[in-house]
Length: 142
Image 1: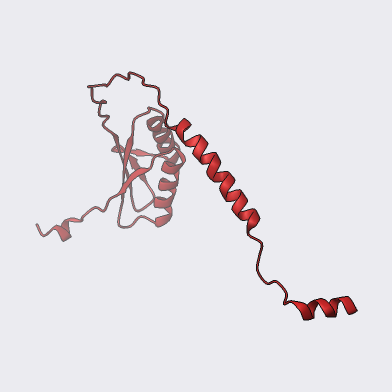
Image 2: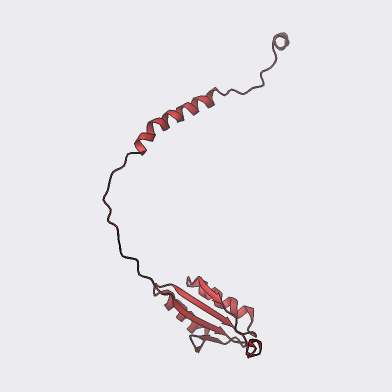
């Protein structure tokens, strides 16, 4: 106990941290980067031909689905059941071309029918979807 009291009376306690290991690591990393940097700039010239031909533009496959008030689905102008619609969306997405899907809900159709159609399109990877609004004859002003 006498030793501890004598030591505290001689000098104050050190409150700083030892940064010597930090400096050692920093200098080691600096040396590694100085050695590795010239190796990364070495390039091998490779003659790569340039294509002057533009990639062919692929027109998206346009599909239209109308949802009527009673839940009736019209796919590409023909009245369809949900299974026929699902088959049509599956076969369209399997063609390998982009699909543009236009969903046209009637003013009296339910949101549930709309969300089911959107979920079916999402299931088959169709992401380019437009939900369109049909203007009635009384709102056109003609």
